[in-house]
Structure formats: structure tokens, C-alpha cells
Amino acid sequence: TQLLEQSPQFLSIQEGENLTVYCNSSSVFSSLQWYRQEPGEGPVLLVTVVTGGEVKKLKRLTFQFGDARKDSSLHITAAQTGDTGLYLCAGADRDDKIIFGKGTRLHILP
Amino acid sequence: GAGVSQSPRYKVAKRGQDVALRCDPISGHVSLFWYQQALGQGPEFLTYFQNEAQLDKSGLPSDRFFAERPEGSVSTLKIQRTQQEDSAVYLCASSQRYYGYTFGSGTRLTVV
Image 1 (spheres, rainbow over the protein chains, first blue to last red):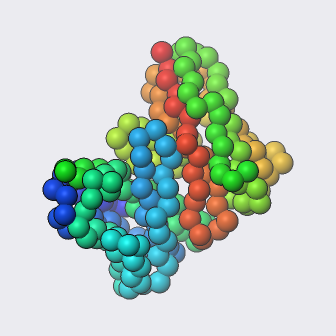
Image 2: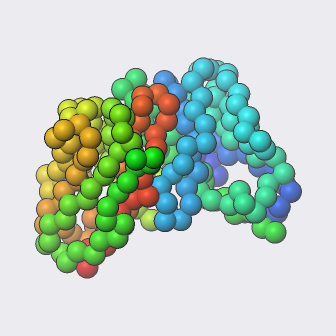
Image 3: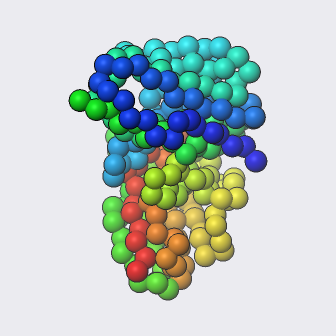
């Protein structure tokens, strides 16, 4: 059974600080996706990483896929209160089925 | 449509009642997925369709859960004889393969 472990589960930091969220597995994935979910809504795709070692940047967010395609990280620079939310990593197998981690609930304090 | 549409948004069912949840995916998306999300948790996989074929139903928690997609577009998730542990948000997503999923807003089911 494939499992994705996300850490930390909860993170509360001051506006302006940097943070990193980790997503780890013992399984190899075809791709890894990061989603953000607001209360009462479905997850919204932020990025898909496909190649081992790949780094993608989305404004202040930097996503990295591990060389072995088993892990990923999300780094946020100079966090803002608008970054508050639930961040989910999800690994896709060859059939495009994805499994989710339990999520990291991020709270940015003003 | 522009996004994935789910209905109803909220459903309150009495224990033992049957419910049907509808998902209207993005037009042309081949893959359709159902997930169950408990409060404070990540979504858990239920079942997966490619066109009308149900390729994986390993996540359905019991034989009270049934999903179909008869014409390869709209899908329905049916739960028979609902129980309190079925209370959750049910999310539907569609995909154009390998480009990530687009999720609907979900149906919040509360069994009382």
C-alpha cells in the first residue's frame, strides 16, 4: 500500500517568516502534485512535478521533487496571511490514480 | 462546463436512508475519481473511472457504496442504508491524465 507522510501536520508562524512542508513516501510515483484546500471547497491544484530533481516556482512558493521521485517539499518565502490553508501533497501512479497525504494545516499570523 | 459540478452541496440523511450524489465532470475529461474526506483529514480514494469503465473500486468502504458512470460523463455515487460513519465530504474530480485533477466543491453528507 502506498502511503504519503506529510510533516508537519500543523504549522503556525508569523507573517514574513519562511517555512517548508515535507511529503515523504517509500513508493515511487509517476508524478507528485500539491494542492491547497480552503474550508468548504475542494482541493485546488498548485503544481505537478514529474521529473526527479525537478524544481518549480510559483511566486513565493517553491516545489521540489526528490531525485528518486519518492518525496517532495514545498517552501514558502515571506509567508503572508493569505497563505493560510490546508496544503495537500498527492502522488500519482501510472494509472493516474492519486493518493493524498493527510495534509499540513498552515496558519499565518498577522 | 468550466469546472466540476457536484450536487447536492449538502445532504442530511436519516440513518438507514439511501442517498445519491451526483458529479458532472469537465467536458472531455476521460478520468473521474471519487474521494471521501473526513474532517481535518486528507481525501481518501474511493473509486475511479476511465470513460464508463470502473477501473478501481478498491477504496469503497463496504458493499453499501456503489458508483456508476454509464455514458462516460456524469457519475453518481450511491450509498445505501446510510450509517453515521458515512458522514463526510464526498469529493469528485476529473482529469485529463497526468495534468492533475480538478475537484468539485464536494457534497457534505451528514447522517443523523
